[in-house]
Amino acid sequence: MSSPGAIRDEHRWRRLETITDPALSRLNAADLLAELLERVRIALAADTAAVLLLDPYTRQLVATASKGLEEEVRQAFRLEVGRGFAGRIAHTREPVIVTNVTPADVVNPLLLSKGIRSLLGVPILAAGEVIGVLHIGTLSPRSFTSDDIVLLQHAADRASAAGQLRFREPEQSAALALQHSLLPPQLADINGLHMAARYVPGHTLGVGGDWYDVFRLPSGWIGMVIGDVSGHGLASAVVMGRIRSALRAYALTTDDPADALALLDRKIQHFEAGALTTALYAMISPDRRSVRISSAGHLRPVIAVPGQPPALLDLPVDAPLGVGRSPSRRRTTTVDLPAGALLLCYTDGLVERRHQIIDVGIKALIDVVTPGHPEAVCATVMSRLGSEQPLDDIAVLAIRRQHR
Image (cartoon, rainbow, N blue to C red):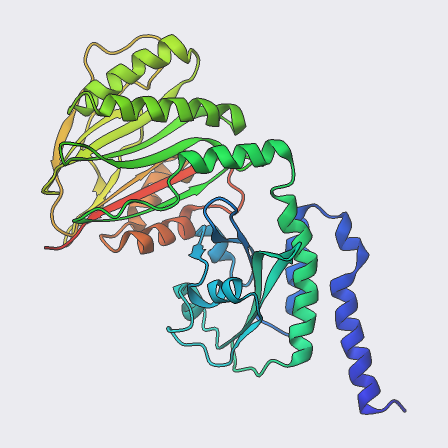
């Protein structure tokens, strides 16, 4: 008969064996993480398991794979190093145990709404540098042991290979650098406004033609843009970068969004032939009470005003940019932005699905938009309508006028 100590040793060895299985190395990065997390959850009798990888350009942790917390990935959750549970692990580079989870321990409200009571997390390291965090959670209180920490660290070592694969190919590294140079990692802190955004690529390189932008103008107005260049991948991202820069320049020459888009249309037709583009350009007044807005073939934003049902913004939609024949006159509409109102702009990847008319997706979007904090609204929108593996790029930009 085996002694209790021998039984424990055998059990420990079997748990380790599932994590160190050489067969995992034959999987691609996404499949390796998915399979590894499932094995971790079983081996450690956990209810959730998740990996957040460190974006090398924004230096933020990004929810990349999960079992039991899939919404974290769908919401494209991001976290600053040093903040919350996972941020603390990345900052200290040490395992962290939380036996009784409270709001003070975590930043992501999903961990609380899920009912997670205990957490264990370890850093994912590569060449001595932190590249991510692996953590598990339980729905009942749990006192994690030193053996649990060792096993989870072994799993983190396996996850390290998948994390490095995301940035290993030269083209992918160049593409990611380009994308992050064009999408602001953090939206500007602008008096009178709260803002949040999401970007999820629909291409394996992690880049595409969708973009959003927010900038201050010398007049005190705030420029806000969301757009979509046709196509996917690095080529579209390069064209998008040129178009984004051109629109910023035109925004300095005119205080009429329609005129700025007309100039951009001429530029695209002359220098970017074939680059069909939709764009929405809005200018928020210095007192934040009104918005001038013009759409070049882009989907109308959703506006949510406190005490009223959310709805599509009432404005005309002119022809896209670069179609070959410019409209005789593009139009600008001025709309009120009441205190507490939220404006949600998005690209078609959020609402368009195969075998489904786009109106269905737009209706589903309207149903979930509220005049809440932009971060919470973006999280809800991505959770309900986003996809872990979108077929098209998704960009979302939410701006709310603060209550006075």
